[in-house]
Length: 321
Length: 65
Image (cartoon, rainbow over the protein chains, first blue to last red):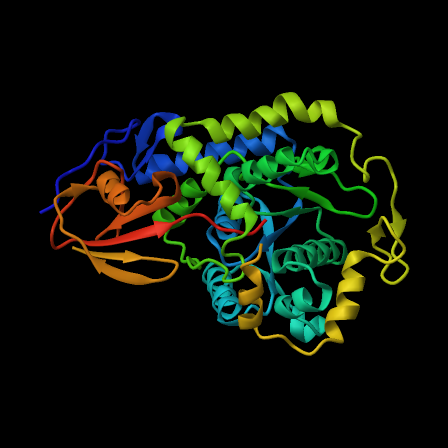
């Protein structure tokens, strides 16, 4: 027999989650209300989206991207999904399945790109061919292909599922290095400029825990397993450090990141290379770049000429990060 | 009670009669980085877990940027 736990702050129904940063517990319905309000506040505060926008959501099969797609559709936005098959063994196969089921069950439009079939490489191979860590090769590929798909598809904005934990961890890393260029670009919305589409992160006021809970109470099935080649990366260690602080000081992550946006980011306007206009057109693809050939074209050239590398080979290399 | 853990996926047997928070502490898992699902339903930190319950401890941290 299981005892009844504590009650929702809003309605006194049995709570499903405690959120120390709000000093409250919530039932499933009021957890959703909180999430909706936080997303709406982010969209409004940072002028992320208008209801007429055609939105392209970058979906991975994980909780955050499926949650933001779900929340945007529920809020009445026109949002299609784009999934990129990264070729990370069974993990990619499973992830793609979650995305397709989510889209099919809701009658949503899903665009797909497969790195191996469409560009002749996959993330493990790109990592080995270019000497980049896998997460770098992955991120570069995704950013470039999302930008391109948005331009070609006539979308007004690319939305990603980056949440408060993601942004706080990136901010933590950028601050440890005092990387002014990256700090100046770490904004929850980037306007369309220099050939790049507008980009928005509507979940920046919501934690990973809240997003996972959203998926659970909404019945959204997502890939729970961690990407095998992300395991042990620096970004995860930053998240662990911040969570250790958060447990003792609830609200610390929100204060760190949202305080940065409120008080520090305005001081960094114009400090990034992109803002100072130091960009050229890539001689191969025409995309904006700081050099002659963009990093993505260089990656494709090297990776597509390289013998395919099994994901297991990259797992061993990944431990050095 | 049976407790399902992830990353890697595995199942362990743990005596009941403890709260969600106590279970996470005993397993040395961060409360900020996990959710606990009891018999298919999400439960808060002070929920009581008993013998016979089926528990999933679900990590919520993902590593991509």
